[in-house]
Length: 558
Image (tube, rainbow, N blue to C red; front, side):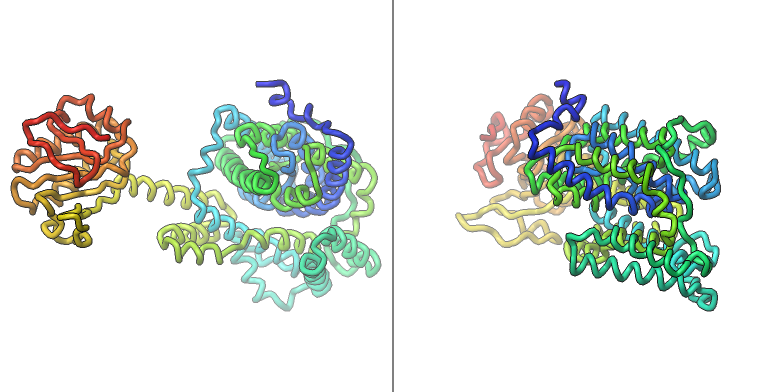
């Protein structure tokens, strides 16, 4: 491992042209990061200033120690909501204990990411199937948007489930604060128009600046509206949280979920970067950079951070080539903290709510589940169940993901334990026999042999089930039938699988039938030949190859 592998920022200097591109991209993303960080802080139950804290030094650390040059680290919607769901049962949102617990959660997330990266554990993300992830993401988008509806109407029915809470606003329409509704909906419409007709413009920043100006001109606060208010000026405080460590064990589930979801977001960004630039990213090493960023967020009064899909896409589009762009984006946030916070005072909370709704709209993708239903209904069903479970369990989104992961892993294990066993017809007289009749094995006997194909590796998980299935298919066949297992799809087997085949050969011989294996791969053949009980089992190059007499040594596959 080279020094540059340990310290990626040593490779930032690649010439003046790359430096210029990185600085311009960093400024562009930084201008978007400022309002997004404040909005996501509100989503996490934190005062807006803590979003800027989390988006400053943590963003810079992600750029300095991350491997994907275009990945922008900082506050993101999904991570913010999961963090809120993990901490909310332990302390009141916005309280001193809540802020301290958020910092502790960030430190735990950082530590888990570093340990996972050192253990080469990025492969754990494969435990979540794509339909389950789509279902969870769609539910998360709906839940996130639902948490912002009361801020748009300035009415809160008081239900704990965000979706139910937003639906119950219908019964409180006379209490709606009209100026807040107009401010929020007007901001949302402006953002949609910018995205539709001027996608290259910083529509989010312009909309927020415009809303802040309107709020100041009409004295929105005097009308009873909710604004950001005065923000402290200065750099984030540097300290290790002291309150709330007794609740650390209760935060483990939320921290692990943040790690897994964050890894999936990083995988999405790195895949897009690889498609466009042809540069692959070591996800295990990227976990180290993400872990460093979250640790920095924890000791600078922030909350858990992750790779941002939207800002990383903007960073890539703006021409970033090294992690220096992320450092520049963090400096833009620091400049805001030092100089520009007074300008953020009149910013209306309904506008921040509109920004969050706009940002998470891309997560809601039910059409993807509909497409999955056409491909494979069971996969789509898991996605829909995950979606429903996550919404019903909100704000505890961990339960929804646990349900999704449990179903996908459990179903995968069940499929492994019950592999596909297919009867096929060998060639007779130079012609292919009729299609296999799954209900009548006798129809498929040709030249005295019944051919069965096993579409799976054989292990202790499925050996007994396979043996029972093959015996069931061979039972109606007459004596002297040769049972041929087409092993073309068997790419591996363990000791239990070899023992099962040896026992199966003896059981078939007791019924005056013979077991033959055809088209056996070399690694599998070597394991079979190491077992004395397989000496009387012939190995053929293909299912229709000539059979040697039973008392002759088995033929070798080619």
